Image 1: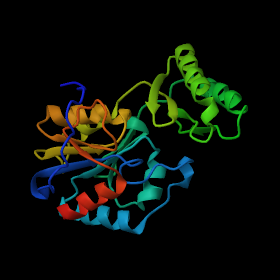
Image 2 (image 1 turned 180 degrees about the vertical axis):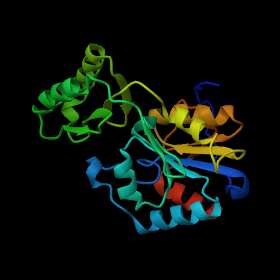
Image 3 (image 1 turned 120 degrees about the vertical axis):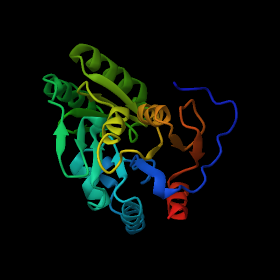
Image 4 (image 1 turned 90 degrees about the vertical axis):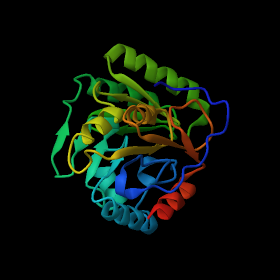
Length: 249
């Protein structure tokens, strides 16, 4: 099933039945407020405690599915989540600690140079290199929004990199697995096999995940405002998401 136009407000989800659930969570905009600069997101005692308790209650059937690097996810979550899909699915660490990563696209260095050249026009433009992708953040450079998006499109077309849209960011990534592919892969490994998948995320990059869990009889939970989505439930923001997770424990 694909993305659908919303005609009515999506309901809030009921507390999870953890005994039968495999829980997949996005990070930025879902577990942590989006910051002006990606490096400004730091560990939080409440979030760390919730994740540790969830992992125990779910017998390890917990994974974070994020656009961040694996190292960044571990830094922010203080290493509390064993299974992680990073860089939108290009890096996957399974519950047993095995890490698999796609080979980097050869055009990434060229793309990084072109984005850095563009970013030199405004101190609010931030280029983030992730090894398998490079992102142009423009939240702090509002006058440059249209030019930044145009630049990213042009570099993607010239290099063959995949253009990944996000909230005030455009990312050029190595073509390869998506967040949905990562969920499908984890669902075939211990301890996720046989559970009902639930994915919680906030932006367009999470739609592949919503579609993946829906195809497996699970549910997607959108965090944030109304928009076209494959999710069937909605929470208003990070605070409401954490409260819902706590109510499920």
